[in-house]
Amino acid sequence: MFNLIFRWQEEVAKQAIKHALKALKKRHLVEEGAHSPAYIALSRPIISQGSEWKGKAEKLEVELQQCYKAQSRLSEQLVVEVAESRTLKAFLQEKETAMAELEKELTQTRDEYSQLKTDFEEKVRALELLLSEYKELKAQLEQLTIRATNAEAENKRLDAELLNVANALYEDMTERLKASGLEKLAQEQVDGIVRRSEEGAEFFAESTVPSVCKDRINAHDGHSLFGCLGSVLDLAITHDNRSIIAGSSSNNLFVWDVNLGHVHHTLTSHTEKVCAVDVSKVSSRHVVSSAYGRTIKVWDLQKGYCTNTIIFHSNCNALCFSTDGLTICSGHVDGNLRLWDIQTGKLLSEVSAHSLAIISLSLSVAKRKFFGTFRATGNKVASNWSRSFISPDDNNIAAGSAHGSIYIWSISKADMVSTLKEHTAPILCCTWSAIGKPLAYADKNGVVCTWT
Image (tube, rainbow, N blue to C red; front, side, top):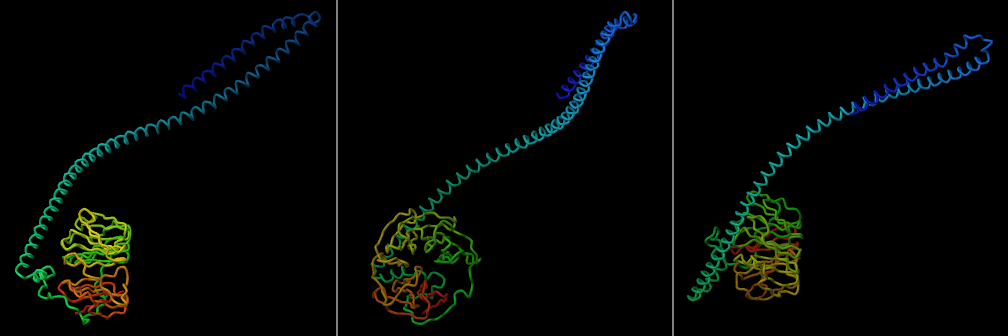
């Protein structure tokens, strides 16, 4: 386009120059015609034509000068127009070069666009394929989820049926034993004589009030488990002795594999410090925990996540599973005991037990009833994480104090029967062996003592 404009302007300039030359030539011929009378007059005698010739000559001279001036102006104008024409030609050539480069870039851009369009179409086809596969996988996942839900419901139903059958058999056995005058043997069945079928059952005996410190152990001089972020506020061991679960101040629960010695689960759902944890006595997969955020959570270790959350207005300091694994017992800051259904999270029962906060729970296998209140003069609990314990045969209770003593009460007598003193540091927890002895407890300095 710029080339056509330049050629048109160049042609116009040439025509203008030709026209100017023709005009000059015509003017020159006219001037020659105008001068011819002067030349004829000059050929006449000077005397007769003197004054006339002089006037005409002066007039012609003036006209000739004007012609020269006009010719000079036209020449200057012609030179300017030629210079402008050359400048315009150079400008047009520059624009033509720029246009050529732009056309080259445009061609390159079109090629890139074509390639990008091809790539985009391939990506769209790939995305459509992925979406199709995703929909198919989603449909399969939904089917598997439905099957898993149905299977889980069926398992729960079967577990409930098995527990009902077991409870019915137990009640039937107890009634028969009572009828035959063997009520005491029935109580022993509940209290742990059934453990004689387990490994180490030959060492089982009824719990006795200990009097001798057998061992004094620095708890953290031996094997240590690492990986917990924050302080360990409570822990529990699964009944198969394969896992240890710890509640920590980092708002999480950490699950260690005892054989491997490292964390293989981190349970994250609490928003405050986890202050209490317990494991089901029926299944090693179910765990319950409480935190300062007024929440109680039920966990499934096989699934690795929380299956139920209970929210209540009073913080729970301590909790434990019932023997059948279907109920949670919780002790709260408001001094009340509460029983919860593990499946629905529904509050089953509430007991106004204490005037102050409950900080420890230990579950008896006897029927739910009030036995009494157990006190010791000068006894002071070491912390909100101190733990007391009921002996396996439900005969005695042991609890530690802030000044390093262990107090033991007889449940049947509702009176203190012994005071054990081996520590100077506050006692944080104590427990009886499941086979009746020994009694073990640990202080704030990490020293563990066993008594027989």
